[in-house]
Image 1 (tube, protein in one colour):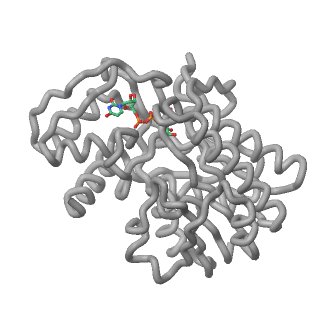
Image 2 (cartoon, rainbow, N blue to C red; image 1 turned 60 degrees about the vertical axis):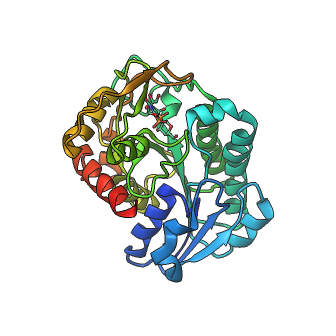
Length: 313
Ligand code: UD2
């Protein structure tokens, strides 16, 4: 793994991954690609002189083919996230998340990239009777976003089977941490809750707040990506990326209030379309095959995230 490229490199997860890659032995050249639709150049501010940044779009196949020259591993993080955003704008999210992913795989195959690690989503599971959710469950996507991310997995597997492109899919479970943008109504709930807590504002909870999530600090996901890029047995597989726990949104807000010494009841609004009720990762496969060991739990992750938002306000 000498030359690596991160799509969505100026995004929240992509920029964290780049910081991880900068510490990784043997990595010599890091290329970041982003169209800055949801990413920000400021996310790469202090590492900018150690990487190559390209303002490029994954819908542009020619640009990808050009940038993938001599690349060993592509970490494909570029996407338009958010379940409600995909419901509001299915066409744009389809074009980026499905057609863009197809282009990344095609360019990787044409440029003889040795491996693509793909950011898949836990949303692929939908509502299952079984918890924690294990990779062998039949997917039941509930939103355009969930379908789009799942199609990416199927394409990744198909490119391995038909063209020999080594691909690994990582189903991220509700990732949070520094640099997650709190500025959009489509932002991840922890970014919104942390910034509400720091401003001493009541957050909005959609539904009864008893839905559960496996909130995963971003450094755990960086570790998972680096392991997936190196493991000889990973290609062709799908791995959950979570911490293996779950918490309700009501509990999450209580925890944040405790950490910040607040007493602010949340506002409740009707539940969101496409929302999954419960989510928790089974980590058996990732632990067994990849040696994945998520070291940062929710409380520690929240402390670090609050500190980051406080410092960057
Ligand atoms: C989904 C995926 C996640 C990732 C993400 C990317 C599931 C279970 N998870 O996250 O793996 O791919 O999409 O976008 O499908 N909420 C509030 N108040 C707010 C904002 C959100 O109550 O102000 C609720 C929301 O209704 C949901 C929960 O918080 O029940 C989490 O929402 P989110 O948008 O942070 O992430 P989610 O679960 O859609």
